[in-house]
Length: 117
Image (cartoon, rainbow, N blue to C red; front, side, top):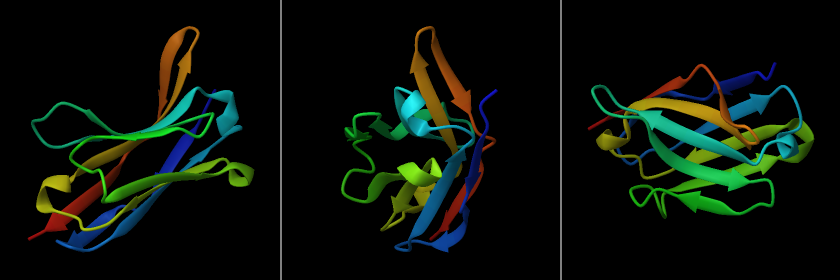
């Protein structure tokens, strides 16, 4: 069983920064990708950023230039550095580990990010 533990959420003012962490219980290279999603109240869960096992990154248009996904391979940890935060970034942020055979996501418990205006 894979465990993903997020941390780093909280309350921040607009324009501020936060760094989320996601610690995996096994090597992150065993997954096709590590992904950050978010879900705001009343909204569908959306992909925010992902990093593949090969190191390729991808971002939602709404966060490009403001968020950066990275990883510490030795610690099996993925980070999401969030800068220039906006109230619309308020959501529960989830870390996920994606495998392709069979297609499956392992999920963390989520961490709340609240950006005040």
